[in-house]
Length: 189
Image (cartoon, rainbow, N blue to C red; front, top):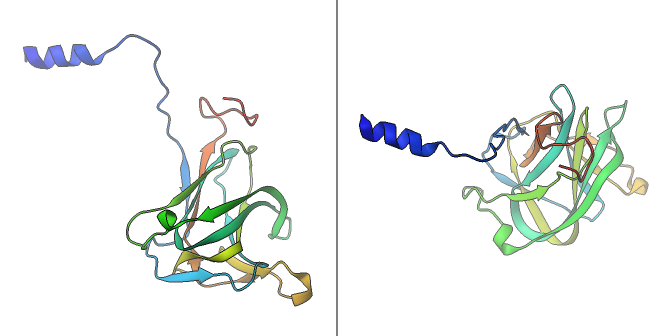
């Protein structure tokens, strides 16, 4: 009993307490069972996932992608429109998928992008992925999510946004805007 008291007394330390509020939300529509590759036949072909955001204001925190093959992709995050379609871009970045990023689908190797510098959102957000080099591929799940789409960004091809049955293993991590240490102004903590 004395040793237990000594241990518990030793655990308390003086100094600033650190907030341990971890209310992040990970939004995913897949079943975590990768079963086929999503490839990109052209550089204008874009795979899209529409992420519903929980009620309230949130800050995009991280984007998780499960890569199946190396190459280069451009990822664009879009605001939602009144027509439930990708609207104005929020952010665009290019990511080279190297051999170390490629997952077997069973090894838990995710590519993670930091989005903490983006503005607070309060509605659905679209994530679009397209190839810009090589032959990249993402893993997909056989779960039809009703949140997965494709489109060809080349308007001359006449392919508007279409729903697809397979769901790319893309996940969006969000943090409530009112979390301690999460400011409503980007770049300030």
